[in-house]
Length: 219
Image 1 (cartoon, rainbow, N blue to C red):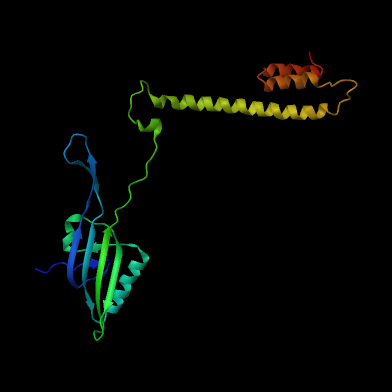
Image 2 (cartoon, rainbow, N blue to C red; image 1 turned 45 degrees about the vertical axis):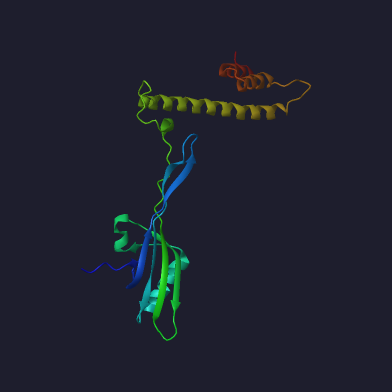
């Protein structure tokens, strides 16, 4: 039975002298009062590591070395396949260490040693949801029923805001007109400007309307 050939991406490592896989659990030793020894707190595991060494030779060996050197230089993730890591379900690895050597009198003959470390995908970013993530929590009433009510409140608030802004603009125009009035005869616009000022401070719209009526000769 032919064993699968170790590969880094699409580069076949034909002559592997040895290969070693290592997994290191993360454990914290915690001293406990009255306990002989330390409690061992498991903190998951570190990334799987693979170290291997071998030989590349032949006319295509130089191209393979150049390709592997480029991957190590870029620090990009690579795929690694070998029978020793079949059960680990590795997705991507980083080529952390790549060493090459050549001997005189042996053209197209390169020795190598690699160290690869698992690079797992990052988890999905956290998402915020309504009510602090208490989806399905019974608050005693149907939250969906608030949709129309909140829309009506927002519409009324918009109308009030528009009315206040219009009154403020009118007040500015009237004050400009009042500045042109003869100070000796008094300001004929004072009743209306006073009423609009009161509106800005919480007065009624009816008061401003009545003052405008008196200014225009109404009752």
